[in-house]
Amino acid sequence: MNGAQDLGGMHGFGSVKPEPNEPPFHAEWERHAFALTLAMGIPGGWNIDMSRFARESLPPADYLAKSYYEIWLAGLEKLMAERGLVMPDEVEAGKPLHPAKPVTRTLKPGDVAQVLYRGAPTGRESATPARFKLGERVRAKNMHPRTHTRLPRYVRGHVGVIDSLHGCHVFPDSHALGKGENPQWLYTVAFDGRELWGADGDPAVKVSVDAWEPYLEPI
Amino acid sequence: MSHDHHDHSDLSETELRVRALQTILMEKGYVEPAALDLLIETYEKKIGPRNGARVVAKAWCDPEYKKWLLTNANAAIASVGYAGRQGEHMMVLENTPKRHNMVVCTLCSCYPWPVLGLPPVWYKSAPYRSRAVADPRGVLREFGVELPKDMEIRVWDSTSEIRYLVLPMRPTGTDGWSEEHLADLVTRDSMIGTGLPKRPDEIAK
Image (cartoon, rainbow over all chains, first blue to last red; front, side, top):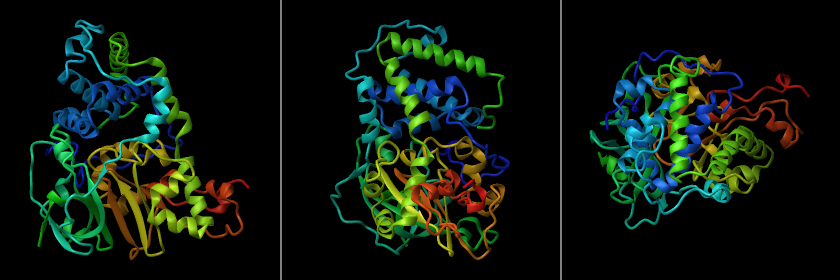
């Protein structure tokens, strides 16, 4: 979706402000927002693409006004409400008002290390040969789905070169909607700076994105 | 995204909301406090950029390891003990005198957790995400890095589950240094591509 999360190429946000010796968290509540989000993925049963979709579907003004973990929190509340796990009136009241929904699994302390070490790999067996080959010129489609996608606006319609093939990976556009993994070939596609940003672009810059096959078309 | 942790105006409201949420989730039996503590401890105390620095230093010392790292990053990184969430599909990008690599996630905050820990605030914020792809040279200047005009800058936008780690160039004047000593030169930013490793004279012997 063309939401506020798709920031590449926007102007007006000011300079980058590195913080010397930055700690992982800046407030106690950030620690908890982080841990609750990770832990709830197990009883909640959503996947990473659903989480991203929940965050980016915040109204743009809201998304841009919130800090990072505030966005996580809003995403978590949305995912839980959609599944009837915790309803907005309960968050407002600060206590449970509805019975707990039965969940099949929760994150046990003894499983934390293993769950983190295993992660959630997205590589899958390829059922079909790759449509594009290394070095081939391709165009990123001009597409504007209202649902989750990982093709940023700044490359849409532009021509780049296939820089590497990564095999088949879970396709976020399907996965975010609960329509299954629908694995697709994944490529890294490199674009010249001037192709993306015009004559004022830096000729020594190249920018790549990782793009699934359905995002690309032959020239 | 427009404000950060320095804005305290709504902090207490958010603090209360998170506390309430945690109580509700515990009372409903969805989360266990001991598991939450372990998650926090892992990313606050155990997993951080020192992991990546060890990988880089090893690659600087061992040409065979470097070759392995550049062709099969997952296996090479797992061999020193780092793997898992947000690093399931690693790729290592080698800086050379001709090419400087820089990593961003314009759409969210994708970052190689097992080797770098959690991303810094600036990496997740609108200024970096908006400008890294359009004006990387300007962004680098804000980090105090000025590269030769003809050096290619390659920006990698992390739009899939591939996670990128930059392998910076080994600083000169470090012949014969041990891996452990070399790792002290490897900064977090040098592995994102927004910085360079420290020079030998920048650290205490």
